Image (cartoon, rainbow, N blue to C red; front, top):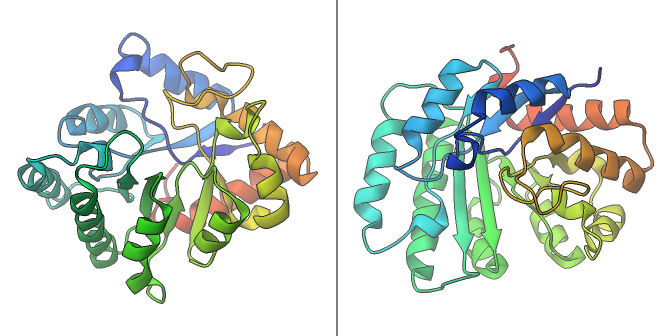
Length: 263
C-alpha cells in the first residue's frame, strides 16, 4: 500500500465529535500514515492535544489562526504562546497567516500577529503553516524580511494564479499545500500547477473538515479522502500513485524534518 501524508487536517474539530477515532482509523486504512494538525486558537488546544496524545499518527502544531484575531488578540495569543512554551512537543507553528475574505477590520493586527509567530518559528526552528485568503500582497509584505532566512514551511491551500505561485515559490524552503480544490470542476488550479509548480514543491493536504474533494464534495471532509486529491494530481503530473506518494511524502518530511524518526 502507498503511504501518504496529510499535512493539514483538523480531525480534532467539533465536526468529528461522533467518530473522531474512527476518522483516524479510516485514514490509516486508506494509506494516510501521518496526520499533521494545525491548531486554530486558544479554544481548540485541548481537543488538539487530546487527539494527538491518543493516536501516534497525529502530530500537533501550535498557532493562532488569522480569523481569530479580534479586539482581544493580545490576551488570546498569549494563551496560545503559554502552551507553546509549556514544554510540550509541537511539530510546527500553525495555522497562521492572513484572511481578509470576510472582514478586513483587523488587517494590520493580523499582519502583526503573523510576524510574531514567524518569530516563534525561527526561534524554535519549526516549520510555519501559512493560511492566506484574499491577502497575497499583504502576505508578501510580511514575508519579505525573511526571504533569505532559514524559515521553512507550507503555503497552505494554494489555489492562486501562476503569478501568485511564482511569488510563493521564490521562498525556496516552502512547499505549496494542495487539497480538494484541485478536483473541483470549475477550478483552474490543475493548469496552474502543471505550468508553474514542479511536483518537488507540492505537498498533499485535506484541510478537513473543509474542502472535500470530488466525489465527496458537499460532505464533511476527512483525511481518508486525501487519496482522491492524490489521484487527481497523478493525472496532472502524469505519474503513477506510487511516484506521487514517494514524492509528496518526501516533500512533507523535508518540511517536518523533526517527524522523520517517529512511527
